[in-house]
Image 1 (spheres, rainbow, N blue to C red):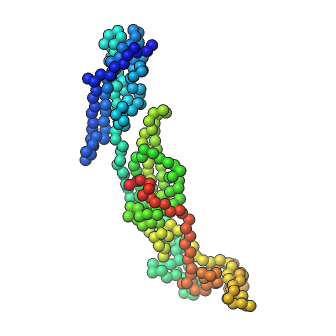
Image 2 (tube, rainbow, N blue to C red):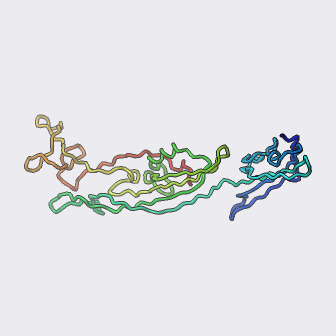
Image 3 (cartoon, rainbow, N blue to C red):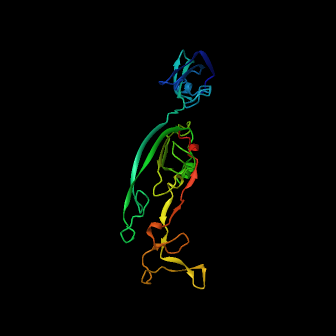
Length: 287
């Protein structure tokens, strides 16, 4: 069966709002609408509530506000006349940002002391196996978003900050964790995303710059060395490195910047290799 007519009632129009502390606007609000329905004899409340002209469950309020139908009530006034009350409820976008600072500590190999001098024995041999307790600051940011793009998030998982972010210089921050959660009913409006981001900030150490905080630092060494060719000392050839006895070495030796063997441990050459992309973290919209 179908309703014969549906007429909205101005006398049943209403609404209310509720504001949280310090807010100058309603953060939660509701609307009420009333309809007079002329139905057919024998129509059930379910028939009346589903009549054309009565807002459906989950339908947005006609004002465009983020208020949706959550309940409907049908009361008979006679054999064919009904009063239908429709209740909408909603809330403003939750713009609260939850920020938590913590830290983490890892052990990293070192070959220099606090003053930058090479850590060597009395006879100039490199000391291996020493580590440095490196403490990084971690910022955990939680907030809601209307939209979430997993592909964009994946790009930032492999990039450091190209801009100053939360007071940290470019190159010092890296997104080390990202999660986004949403729960909604099929066919209904999409709810807001609960997003949590973990950004780890690192102060450069062992002579690196801010931009190199997340670079890989490695000592220039190897089994092969360059050497001046006897026929033309301005040209360099390549051969296996040898020790003071002229025997080929079995362990890597230090190399100068041009690949020649370096015998002074204090003059070891270190190379910083970039492995992460660089992107503007302000574009994430986290703060």
